[in-house]
Image (cartoon, rainbow, N blue to C red; front, side, top):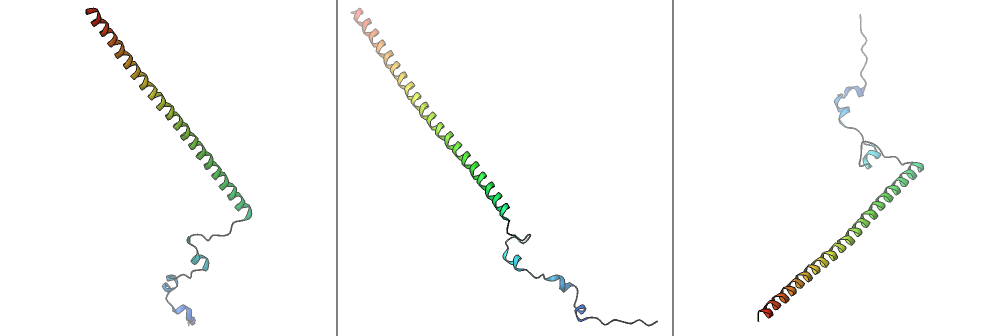
Length: 116
């Protein structure tokens, strides 16, 4: 039995490992920062939806910002009221102390006057 040998093609003479060593890079992969997926332009409807969602997110953030400013202003107003109340209480305490000292002086003066 004679076996006919086929002639090898010139491309099959190269070692198999050299074909796996390098991979040609396409223009899309070369220009992209994320090579895992190629970015395609989005459609008009999707762009409108994303724009609408972004506006809602900005609106939500603006509402939170206004609420925080309102809370801060109310807190400042209450702190001012507390400061005024503290000053009033200090003045009342000082007045009471002065009145007590005045009353003690009067009573001491009366006692000394009666002793004479």
